[in-house]
Length: 454
Image 1 (spheres, rainbow, N blue to C red):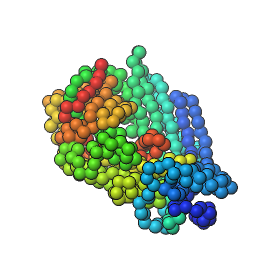
Image 2: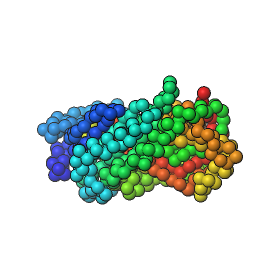
Image 3: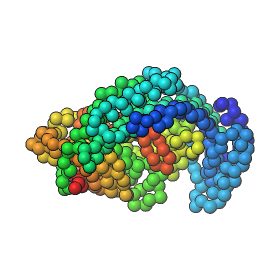
Image 4: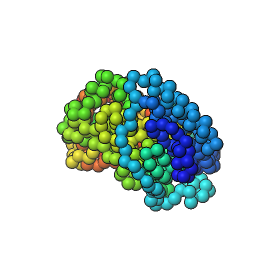
């Protein structure tokens, strides 16, 4: 395939061009309550070509190699037209020429697991949840997605890389009279089928939370000192902070670009945040991005000071900052955009028990449940939580929303746990879907957080 791609690019007359071919194979089994909703395998493929011509940068996707000449012609015409209308030409930061082929080590290859066995696994989890009489409804879904990517550019880079993602997701709905409560189930990874096996204990723990929520009391709205668990703190890191570390989202926003200027003091001295897609065995792992740039760790914040951001080759040139391999496409239908890989708050020194003791009176909030950001302000739901009294976890609470200003909240993170966890089933919907976008955090203690309830 690499030789075919090189031959296609040989017909492009431009300052720069690249082409990516992908073959995508997906297996899925899903249940809706006791009913089998979907089962099967699907395969698809296609190409994306990008052209830099006379200062304009254009991309086009196509499915058949026979359409390559037409696609090249269209991409060149579009790039030329864009170049005439731009105030300044597009420049791509220099990138190392790479020639490599990479297949990730897998503990168990999902392509070697029969669809019958996948059916048995997800049915077992679904039946386990429905065995509880207070669980009134379920949806369960097991999948594996394999992307075989081949990338070539006119600078000489030639890369093939295989991405393997497995996952289980679901929703449990518990019912008691007119009261309904739902809890999400989510697990998986990028290093083999083992990530979706033997999850019975985890499913049972989620069932218990859903059932316990039926008797939980709604939280009273107010301003609290709170501890966020790893999942909720990770979502906060991704949604409220991480997107502003993506150069394309602040590039044309004058105020936000000034606020996110490298060297600005944004958080508490104890706060360190990084994005590192090179961590092996994690959901967000990849070796090369979809521009053929090697993935690299980026220290986004150090001791509360902004120290880095995520780039494509174009934005790295625009900002005058190093490239770091964070330009990712959902699949062959899209040109790549800047995405987080594995973003997380670095662990501190406190045990969970020490955090609870330091909190004294407040709230312990767990797991994200929807939310939104508007500029530097955010609102997230928490699936459940607990009152904390005199440094002891007390009764369960529900109907929880947290809200605040990003910069105030970063400064109000006053203690960080030593128990970092990275998510096992992620996702980000910025422009395209990225199911491998990974986030995480230790437990964190935040002062003066607005909590909405009933």
